[in-house]
Length: 80
Image 1 (tube, rainbow, N blue to C red):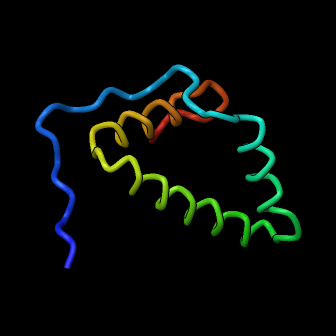
Image 2 (image 1 turned 90 degrees about the horizontal axis):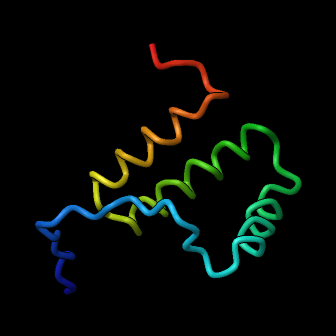
């Protein structure tokens, strides 16, 4: 049986500088994953991917800051 990962006491800072080894390759993989999917299937794929990536990050504070940052982009309406 594997032990649950331990949480660090020090909150991790959200990375804002490019941190992907191959950002163009990742973008291409992401677009390819959506080929042939309906809009609903695409949304489901995105939701699954977000949850998988959130599990990799693991830090609730970082995830909250990521959500806030993504939501605060100028092309989205203000939160109600």
